[in-house]
Image 1: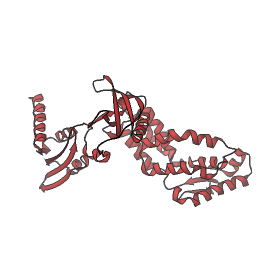
Image 2: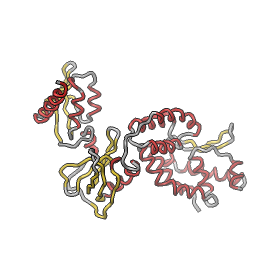
Image 3: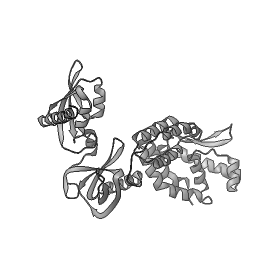
Image 4: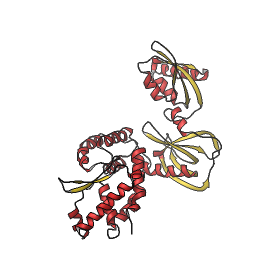
Length: 358
């Protein structure tokens, strides 16, 4: 027979991802645990206490008399069950925080209250981020939002419906070649963690279909798309990028791999723009536009090394050709100074742009 301690792992996991992880991981965890939790809560004869706790966790208001009738036991038995839940919560503050099963004299029901439940304003923020990034299909996004709503207070859910309905009405997903971005992310996360060699079937920009044997390194998000960063099997000079939504098949090999040189995913995220590969370099440029902060936010490695009036001298470590696109988008507000080869690249691109109009 299961006791309340049986839920320790699930409850702790919910707490961790509510506090520290993004919405895509909420979806991935629900897929991995719902079946198992569902099997437990449906086994009422052995797990009545666990069942009651799970219902409270989902936001249900619990009436002692209704529960007694439903489980065909006395109200005293249900009261003992509720006290056991209360004791569990009190004895495990390090895991469940300030969680309490509170009684409402107005409705004559118990409900679970805890600090790290998503509140309406937090869910609205998450929904707007998910809608704004456009990385998921509409079907995947609706399913994910529905599960997120179940992690909010029951009274708040109805108030959220209109906000979410308006957001989804105007939602336009980007084109995907794969069946599920979420499924791809989960599988790729696992092979990255276990360093498993893979072969992917992939649609290139020109819509030709290719296969690539890869050493998967990391998953990154940029400009509406998730990207797989990987080395080709025999090449570790330059990592390549593959849009996750263009990967239609992933074959896992029995072979594991070792990366010979150090790879820092966090550092790369700060140095790359628009997910265009290329070379590492240190650049300097002048900026005279209205918002230097926007430049600093866009290039996390950028530092102001000199200021004169509204002219800023900026230095940054960057990777790839995406930085060219960003600096060109700033027009006359930017003048690249170093290195010499980068200055020449920018001159050539400006000339090509000029030739388009004159």
